[in-house]
Length: 174
Image 1 (cartoon, rainbow, N blue to C red):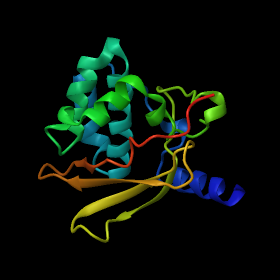
Image 2 (cartoon, rainbow, N blue to C red):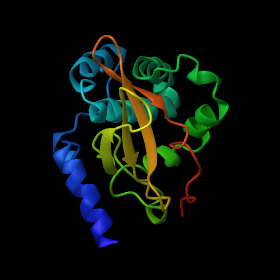
Image 3 (cartoon, rainbow, N blue to C red):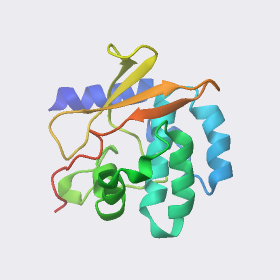
Image 4 (cartoon, one colour):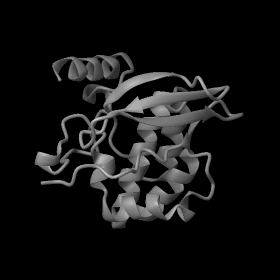
């Protein structure tokens, strides 16, 4: 277990995803767009922003802004028709919190959405899709890492393309 934790922390540090360099959740869609032009130039930055949009969507008070942020950060324009994904964000937000370092089922996946680092296991060009990037993320509620696949748009920004494994069930919070 120590080796996996050390690898996750090392990869996160190399990718600049450690908590010391992270910004707070975007206040609004304009701030998201501004950050996207800077941070989504790298697949890892786009992935982090995507999770931030999910955390915004998961809260009723910021759901509308989160909806717009998710649409900006994804290739799938019809993501809202994916009932499993939408239901997960609304009724099981802990699934998405489980990808933040320091969470666990025993602490009910408690984390600070304004300051978190993703548990990145690997980040590399996707071997199966030309031009795509594959990031393996470790959820603290599962044994195996799960893939998130991103593609670069004509604007030079990375967006989430394949995410179906990310919202799969995890161990329930204590």
